[in-house]
Structure formats: C-alpha cells, structure tokens
Length: 417
Image (cartoon, rainbow, N blue to C red; front, top):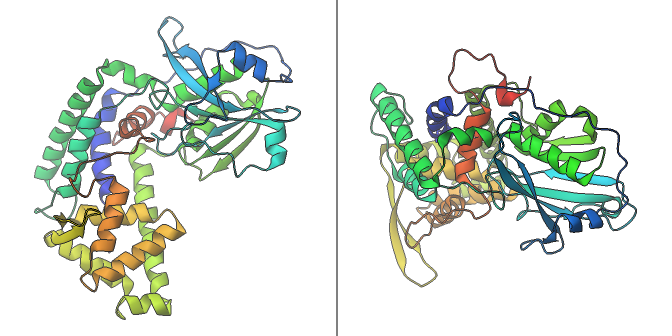
C-alpha cells in the first residue's frame, strides 16, 4: 500500500528551516522561592492583574502577563505578552488545573477551551486554566498566511511525474531545498520579524511562561493536564519544575527522546497502520464489504491511489448556489484527506463511505471530505484556513524544538533529556 507523503513534504521544509532556528540549550534562570500557600480565592488576584471576561469565552477571565522574550538570558530585557484564561473554582479553592491541550503545535488554547467534561467535584475546587502560547492567538501571534496558502495549494494541486510519489529523485530533492529556502524567506518577511527571535517561541519558553503565571498567581503547586502536543509542554515543565506540580496527567504522550524526523516518521507509520486496520475492518463487515462492491477494501484504496499517482481525476462538485465547479482530484489530496479522517470513529466511518462511493464513480463525498479537511473554499479553491490554528507556528515550534537530519545529535528531542 502506498505510504503517506504529506509528512515527508513537511519534513523537507523542517529539515532545512530548523538548522538556523535551533537555540543553544541552557538551564533556565530561576530563584529559590519560599513555600507559599494556595490562595483561598483567585478572583482578587485576577482583578489586580486587570482581568476581563474573555471575548470568546465570556465565562472565563482573561489576564495578560508580561514575560521575558528569552527566559534563559537575564541580559535580554525584551518582553512579550502572554494571555491566560481562568474559570475560578465555584467552591473552596484547592488550586489550579492548567490545561496544556492545544494540538499541533499551533492550536489556540483559549478559543478552544471547554469545561463540560469536568466533573463538578473538579470545578468546585480547582480553577480551570487555558492559555494561548506565545506566537499564537491572543499572545503575540506570528503569521504568514499568504506564504502558507501559496505553499499549501501548490502541494494539494501538484503532481509527481518523476519516480515514486515524494521527493525520491535528486532533482526533486534539489527543488525541495530551493522551495524551502524561498518559503522561509517569504514567511519571515511577511511576519516582519528578526528571524533570530523565532528561536524564542519554542516549547521550553512556553513552559517558563506557565511557571511565570504560577508565580504571579502565588500558588506553590498546581495540577497540569497535557494532551497531544500539550504533552511536550507538560513534560518540559515537569522536567524544569518538578517541585511545582501537585500532579500531572498525560494523554497521547509524545516520545521526547526522538529526533524530529524520527517523530514524524513514527507518526506517518501510525497513520498507515490505522488506515490498514480500518480498511481490513471494512472487509470483515458484511455491509461495508458490500459497499466496496465485494472487493478488498485495501485494494480499492490502492487502486485509487495508483490511478491518482498516474494522473489526477477530473470531477464536478455541486455548490449550495446550485452551480457546479470542476476540479482535479490529486494523489496528495487523497492522502491528506485519508490521514485527516483517521482521528475519530466518525471520521473513519465517513471515509469508508466516501471511498466506497468512488467505486460507483461518485467522487462528491470524497471531495466534501477533502474540502472540509483542507479548509478550501469549493467555489474558489482559496485556502480559508482555521482561525483557531496557526500553520506558521506549527513549523516554527517544530524548528525550534527538534533536530532534523543532523548527524551530530547530542541534544535530545525538544530540549528534554
């Protein structure tokens, strides 16, 4: 079965970009803090900090704290603002429960905050805290949307006429390096930032921002929950400040010992394993197998991928206006859509239905999934983006945290040993 190459395209960008953005590892400058009691009420402190209702989460109070641009260099006096959102406990306060939950990296924390899944016993005694990490959302956002759109659309519409899918020839690899250099130059220019400062937007700095918030509130310890990329933040904080955690919960834990390309390759392999499991589960289901026309679902996917690798498939897509638009479905669009649909039970189910429909020559369900997952406007094929996710910071944090294709790898993945 053909492999996922969306990650390889990202890897090509990261492998070159990260070489100039990797900061020198350092030990954070900290003071020995005297033991402090947990504040009996946080509302007064939030008011002192100028807290106001969050625009997108009016039940929460947003506060802005000023933190060093570089926590590890006391001679650097430049600062940036980072925003935290707090839902105070409604009963006797036991402390804070910080949610390191944004996906990516690149996901906003505050706009995506939710508390419905917390039990009343937690909400009664713990302040629920979300944040937009530096460079994202309300916290000094760094964006190059024009550059990203051009690059992403080129990937979605591009075809590979040389060798196998992916940059497997020397000519393709040379072109990828040149394209990556242009992407970096264009993105940095669009942001309007000194590229040297991008090294201060990685996970180690984010962890210190959380420590600054803890110190500002005045609690001796707090609980932290990390999921997906948030587990990198949580592990980094735990490594630097183990004495400040009352407890730590990790969900979907990232292996912090892997180099950049190892982590991405592991993710690629995992996606393929899930896809194979989903397709084989279809084979074992009478109704799903019938929808595939009695054919092996793995073969159905492979046949479609092979056809698309040879040349794109023309399609017509109906718009809400009653009009239709014509387009070309590419191999890259299939793989991007397939991997995106593997995250949830409903996603996997709808992908199987869309794949089965292609057997009947109906590509509309698959195109609907493609448009939804890529955030593309069907009428114009413009990239709409996700207002709660920073494509720029996805690459920026990867480049700061990780090592890519470097033989001398004395520093462990994401600055954690």
